[in-house]
Amino acid sequence: MHILDAAAVRNNLQWTDTVEALRRMFAEGCEAPVRHHHPLAVPGEAEEATLLLMPAWVPGRYLGLKMIGVYPGNAGKGLPTIQGSYLLMEAGTGTPLAVLDAGELTARRTVAASALAADYLSREDASRLLIVGSGRLAAYLGFAHSCCRPIREIRVWARNPAKARVIVAGYQEAGYAASLAENLAEAAAWADIISCVTPSTSPLILGRWLRPGVHVDLIGGFKPTMREADDEVIGQATVFVDTREGVLAEAGDLLQPMAAGLFTPDDIAAELSELAAKRHPGRTSPDEVTLFKSVGASLEDLAAAICCYQNALPAAGW
Image (cartoon, rainbow, N blue to C red):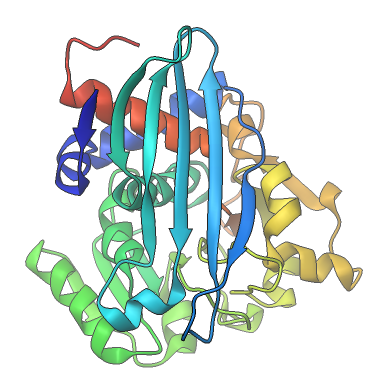
């Protein structure tokens, strides 16, 4: 059995490869039960952690299981918020093939899923990206979106400007015209794509800020109590999701408007599998406001793990 640590996952999951692996898996499908959530008390911490168990398999080919802990308090300790491992197995026999670092795998597949969605939902000429957040995903989003859109300018906003400046510096070093967004409202009105990667429990993006044609990408919330956009954003946008099953169980950005009678499951235009399989056209006009809400899916982990494993071990076949 092979061990693929964070560096190995990073080296063997290039952005275009990962986006295309997800496109293929969403189009072809796999068995992907809804993930298990378990709260974890952390002595001495004000906020509990969350244990997530996420299985998925392609019958007769690959079977994967991700076990991760989401530890909000780790940020203050200089540690990654997401910790865990991914076990990839041969589905026909259960033979273990590899253990992959789940934090890096999760980060890369998450931003790749957003880029894949943006390939269907953002304007083809989208070049201005606003990133809201300052964690590992914020550092990756610009690179992933650049696989699908001509991203030239990046602005970063976060509650902690010092952390946002670190993200900005990373993009500047990579050659982007990147800067700190000091006013979130102005930055939102400027952007072609807005990507939010925060654990916020109150809306950060307001509908009155949005201009026609913008694409809103909500990544951070994975609990019913979390919220990154207000009701006005949801009301004016054509809403797409990674999976209906996952979002309708966990996504506060949609569940809270539903509880208020402002949104229904039927208002979801399509999920990523329908976009990837070309059963829905995605964006239908230049001025349409589109929104993609994701909570993560084990299908994405399996696709990325297979891609990483096959890149690390070229002899491994599909």
